[in-house]
Length: 287
Image 1 (tube, rainbow, N blue to C red):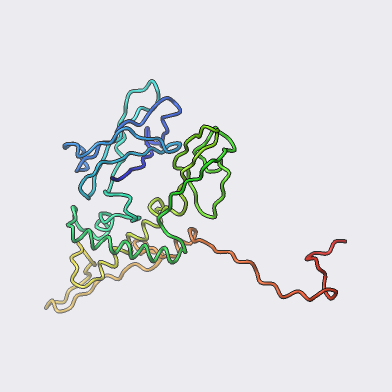
Image 2 (tube, one colour; image 1 turned 120 degrees about the vertical axis):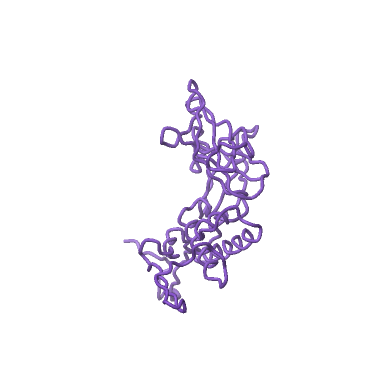
């Protein structure tokens, strides 16, 4: 089973209908972007994870790309409206920050993918992810942990990580919280970098996975390189040069991810202190 976290859009803006008495009620998936065929699968109701973020538990469907509509009520007195911003590559939650369909888009390969293509693209995605994880010195898949018996610092925003007396040296988000009879809470936390939610990470992984496949000899990867000239006899072919770093269409460099790099701090080594009475026993003299 996969999950899908949705940020509702209405009237051109992200909306959280719950404070105004509204709700997010239903997700319907279709096999084509026209959304006019039979419904492939539906999920209802949505659970509110935090302000403006709702989660659907999706039924098992064949791997591939789907288009969806989310039905929501903007506020308590409004009529239901439809949000058609959903495009899903399923399954999700497999430890991949990008989908094989996204790599196929970069290569110009038509969908749907065969099982052989899907397996090959997933392998290249994992390879690109390993390179990113090594550079950032951190995994791209976060971990779930539960902190028990916590007393919140305030109670008007329990979805805010700052409301809880916990400290982590990494990204942390509240997934869920459950009250205990003694007034404390058990809090489910998501710890670490969620690479699938970082657009720069997804773009890098997709671009480099696609390029790795494109460079394989004999690969049928869509349009491929652009031919600039062919000799009269057809014995030589010239190709347009690839864009250099910084030009439009160039592959993203791994330096573009440096803001996400995990830094490791170590105390500075100090020279050994001379024995007393040749040096003070204190690190600072007071006057």
